[in-house]
Each structure stands twice: as structure tokens, then as C-alpha cells.
Image (cartoon, rainbow, N blue to C red; front, side, top):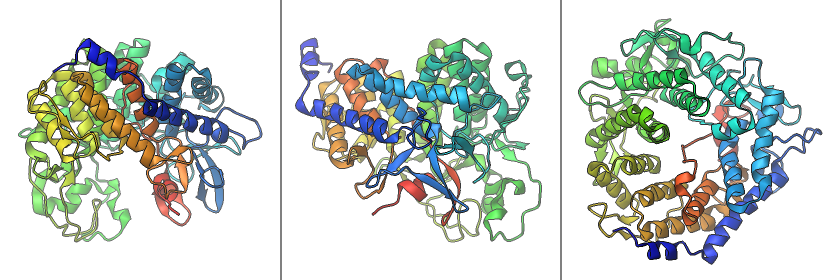
Length: 550
């Protein structure tokens, strides 16, 4: 049942705990401004380091060939910038938003390449000692994989530079506009092409291409194009975003509607060895890696696009973003909604096991791969590896919760209900209007759980959902707030400034202030650095830096 207006007013009464949570986020932000802004280059730029050593307050560094680089990766600061922006909204203190704006402005004015691409992403960052871009530790290319910059704030700072960036992003990553062959790596010196005036040839799925049409990069392109349309009115940008999104839909398995991670096949440029033994044998120049490793057992269905060993990318992050675009674009986003809901329902039907709250590993034809033992080494792992079901992640739960809010679909409600039970969050009810029986003593402290609960609260504004969100936010303060920063564990020695926790706490604050519908939604934006790091080989900053414990 919906609460009455009097009930709703009473539950929004602020408590001591509400104030404490908001103060914790302000403490975090003040610490970032004090310890994290540039006092390293000698030029007092408005740039931020990515994180610090908790005890020494030294900046995190990337170590390559005995050189140390002080990391400032703007792509790894987009959750931080959203936090700073919202703090200004809720606290009325302009310095937080201003700090984020000035960092964007400096990048636009001093660090953008001639084509408009910024020095950020998976294989680029700025060394905050020299203020020079660094990329030679890996591909030295522009790369986004589920990065989703804060385009609204970028646009506010400099609309023309934001427009130039998004156009350059598409231009650098799309290799062939006729079939939308694209790649996760983009060159900084790519001449500008015809962009939206290009000719599209509506190719058949799984054409052989030069690129790797991964959904993590593809979703970033889809989001960027749609945002350029919404912010700048470019109809062509939305048209091509929808074409790109539709490529993944057209490549779904025709019988199940499952998939896909990519809609093309890498063109085989050299014959793979009869027996693969080294990581270099898993290079895409040898053709489809899933086919190379598993076609002897499974035939044609063994292809990279059809591998759903985990559905996180397809049904978690991609679904989350496209559901947001469906809502954000209104009637122009109807295709995004239809395609995403169809995909989520297929994954429910063929993959979900409610008794264990898990998803099966599968090929997109529905073949259950639970217990399958890899017969040989390859791209997906060593011989002897066994595939197992994966827990229904909170990211996927968030996608289903947002899907229910946008559709009121009873099947999706049952999915949301089942996953909530699987996380011991209580019973949201057999039907949406039933009285929920929630576990208000839950110890869950994952910020994604808060976003999911608040999606349900927006759809069914029962006070118990807000009570649960407050409890989960209190858990974050108790379990993840250490020495003025948010950390997955108190044993970590480095703090990343880009953690999602403060955003989730501010989402609860937005609910308390009746501003939840006006909040920029959580999109699973993540930053990362991927490349060679002394002592680790090819790795990520999360592994070499942020996962290190005492």
C-alpha cells in the first residue's frame, strides 16, 4: 500500500543517523579536496590524484620500468565528481561542485588532444608531477569500458568541448561505419570523418571484422551518442546510438533471445597452433577465441558473442544504462526499453535458478555449462577449469529493479523479489501492493543494494523501503568508512576517491529531501587503468594498488 501524505511526511523527518551519514560524505569530500588536489606539480592545478596511501597520504602511483607516475585519471574520478556535485546541491556549499568543474575545465583547456579526445581511460592518465599524459605502459590509446563520464557537468563547463569529445570518441573507435565494426582502442590522431552522415549497410550479425565489438566499449558509445543528442540536439548521434544498440539485439540467439557480448567475429589473420599453450595464442588475430577453445565440443554456438559465462556485462551494466536512456529520452527511448526488457526476460527464463539465487553459465542457445571442465587452454582459462553458476549480483538486481519501475511488469517483480530474498533483505511481497516484510536488521553494506531498494521505493513508495535504504547506508558507515575515506575493507592501505559508497548515501539523502527523481541515476560508472606494472606484469590499478592490504 502507498503511504498517506502524513505518513510520508513523518518518514522524511531527519534523524541523528541521517545527519551523521551526510557529515561522513562531507568529511570524505573535504579530505579529497585537502589531500587530493594538485600540490605535486608545483603549478597548483585543479587536478586530482586518483587516491592516496592512508597512513602517509602519499598519492597512488603507477610503476613501470622503474619509473613512478603520480596518477591523475579523470575517467577514474567520475563517481567522485558526481558526489561533489550532489554535495553542493544538498549542502549549498559551492566549493564541491566548483572543484569538479575546474578539473574538467583544465582538461579541456590544457590536456585535450587536437581532435578533442581527453587523456583518460584504461590506457591513459596524466602524471601529476610533470602534467604530461602517460600511456606507453600499454596500448597508448583511448579506451573506455563502462566509464560513462558525467556528461551533464562536462556540458555545463564547456558545451563545445564536450560535443567535440563525443564526436571524436565515436570517430576514433568506429572502424567501419557501414557495418559498425568498432574497437575498444581509439587513436588520438584519427582524422575526423563523416560521422553521422556516414552510410549504414545494416550488416548481418557476426560478420568478420578488424575490431572487437565488446559490449563494455559499445555501451559507452551508445551512452555518449544519446547524451550528445539530449544535451546538444544532434539527431544523428541518437540515430547511430540506436543502430549500435540494435546490433547487439540482432545478434541475440534467434531461438532464446539470449546474448550477446559482441556482434562481430574477429577476423582470423593467422592460423592458431594445434595446441595453445601461451597467452599470446589467445590474441584476437587468431580469430574467434571461444571457437578456438570450444568448437570441438560445441560447434557453431561456441563463439565469443554467445558466451554467457557471466551475465554481468550484458544484463547488469548495459541493461542499467539503456534503461536510463529509455527514461531519459522519453518516447525517443522506446526501443531501448523494449530491447532491454526482452533481454532481461530471456535471462530470467533460461539462466536464473531461484532456489540458489544464481545464474547458470550458458551458451546463448541455452546450453547449460554448469560443471563443464575446460578440455584445453585458451582465452577463457586453463585446461581443467570448471564452470560454475554465479550469484545473482547486486548490479543485476539493480537492473531488474529499475526495469520494474519503468514497466510495472509482474514477471520482473517476481525476479526482484527472489533476488532480494537471496540477499536476506526480506520479502517485498508476492504483489507490488502487498505489505512488505523487510529485514531492517540486514548487515548488507554494498552501495548497489541501496540503489536497487530506492528504485523499488520510487515505484512503491512504502516507508519500509526507505527504512531499509537507511539501514544499508548506516551499514556502509559502520563497515566501510575508515580514516575519512570509503574502503571495501579496513585492511586496505590505499583509498580510491572514486568509490560508489558516498553516491549511494547521497541517494538516500535525496529520498529524504523528496528529490530522488531529480537525481542523476547510478550507471555503474567505473574507472580503471590496465597495463604493465613492475612486479605484476599486465594488471589493473585495482589489483596492483587498491586491493593491497596491510
